[in-house]
Image (cartoon, rainbow, N blue to C red):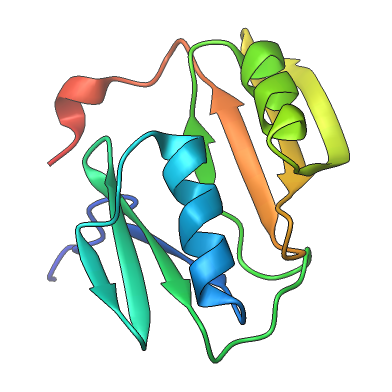
Length: 125
C-alpha cells in the first residue's frame, strides 16, 4: 500500500479582486516583495511556504484556512490590525501553549495566525 504524499503547507491562496492593493498590503505584512508577479497570480515566498493572490476569485472569511506561524500571536495580531486588517478572532490558547487567532484582511479574507512552540521547523521541506 502506497503512503500518502502530503508533505505539509505549500501554498495558501487568497482571493484578491484588487490585485494591486492586495499586493501592496501583503508586501507590508510579510516584509518581502512577491517573487512571482503576473496579472493572473501574485506569489510571495514566506518562510519556505507561499501565499498566492488570485484576482478572479471571491473573498470570504469562510473559505479555506491556512495558519501562518508567528512567534507572538498577540503582537502580530495587533500589528495586522494597525496595517488595516479587521478584528475577527483574537488570539487564544487552544492547549499545550498553542495560540491561534484570525483577522480579516482589507479584502475580506481570513488571515489566520498560529503560535506553536511544538512545531519543528527542521521538518519543513
